[in-house]
Image 1 (cartoon, rainbow, N blue to C red):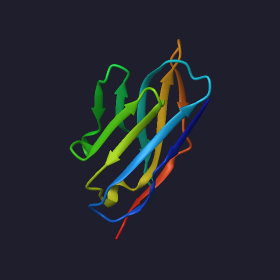
Image 2 (image 1 turned 45 degrees about the vertical axis):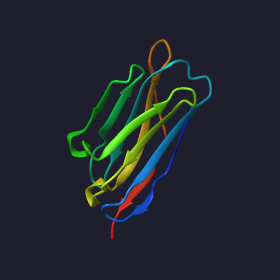
Image 3 (image 1 turned 180 degrees about the vertical axis):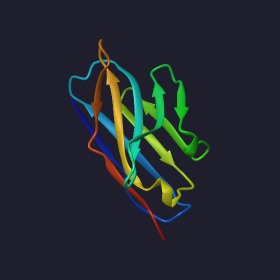
Length: 116
């Protein structure tokens, strides 16, 4: 099983980026798809979660600015990030809970840098 994240980069404050994370391999049924991030000198934190039923949860710090979505046919989760702030600078990781026992899989991370 592999999770391939992409879409990170350097953006100015107020800008936008769209992250993607595609799952491949014998992953089974995907239940929950999530994005986490880890900023410089900080611990990893949950950014957004979407279940296979469509329930969505966001961290307070990104509400109204970030949108999580998923394409089940493509086994892909997206994170649309708008109105980016310097404090959004972090490595963003996708996580998937899949299969009968809801095994957890992590992507390698993609770096987002918000700076002028």
